[in-house]
Figure 1: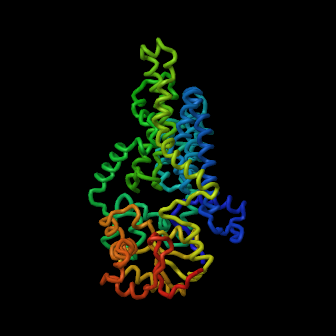
Figure 2: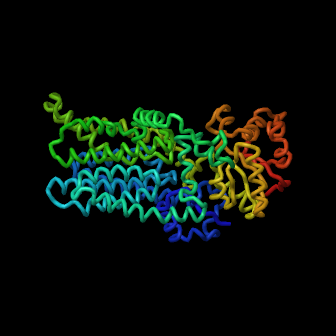
Figure 3: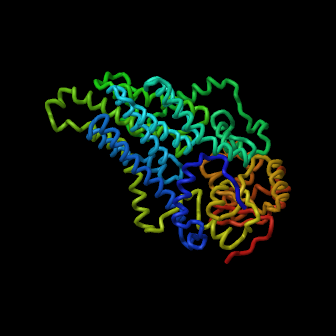
Length: 520
């Protein structure tokens, strides 16, 4: 059973697909999750590809910053990138941010060359177009990066001669490249936006995940709220400014970029290039305000991190200028580089402190590693659903982590809705397609990081299901259940009355419509 993705931009998927083709990832027997294999081998490959782009990004930024400033600032910036916990976290997340960082770094490299060519009286067409091409590829990696491209188009229209020509060519290239996935979305879903437009619910509605879990998008639970749109965009942008340090990877020199905007750099190319960076960042911040973003964790829409290296370079340059003017520094040569050491230590502290426990755990577990639990257990999910075939390939599981079930267990999975009616609609549709829903799986994805009130808002009618396992194991030996005592859920609870705990103490609870056999 095949499904077309109409949500993600295609480039990162194509990159991973090429790698999978090279390693024959379609061979299920070769890449089958083995017993006691805590980390899925293909997860390691995805993280490896992302890490490769991260390391390439460090190299590109070193070349760029050494050209703008000097080797010392370039080296410190590279070290700060290497010690940035957020960048490593994105590298291991499977998100496209590190590919985006590589493309954006390449774009800024060529953009600076174009600015420098302009200041030297040379024709900047080639580097300006190469920069635009990299930003088009960036947009094909994540749709929110289109906002960055818009900022560059405006800058290029003003900065590069003949005025407007570079912007027109790059815009035409972007339209040609983007038309293909839009047409594919239209073929698959009847809309050129596919399901990607649901990202708007992060910023303007009740949340993207809430919108994806309802069958009626006109309901109060999911409708876009456009009242006071401009004020909310402004407010969210201000919030981004307040949290700019964590957004920029907690690199303490990066926010100094905004102060560096006031400094009169002697080289006109350096002074002018910072306005290109600022313009792209302003449009990126506007896009994140509309589409939604959070400084907590690895948010898919977080693209502030792309600007961290070049902003860090400008911040370090300003700090170095101010530091060198201190009388004590002039009199004591040993203090010449102390400001770099302080910045590196402060910025690297989260990674260093977090690595201590990780190193201990790694030494204890060895090469098997430890899964991202909670909420994911690849071996458990694969063993129960795929190897023991508890759910057939033409049957469907409803769960709070459908992406994990589809990836690790190779089973069709749907996101748990908020309303009983929505669930019943899914049952009818699945039955008509001869792919019946046979069970529901509850994991820490729903209850792990939320309070009871947050769970009630997020899961609506299914709150009793989400809390059922917690309540049962909290009241042992009596074992009080909630799901079967909720009047709203009586019909569903009766149908899916067979339960099994995949992990001790109800970490993962499966509710089946058919009696469950002991897989052992």
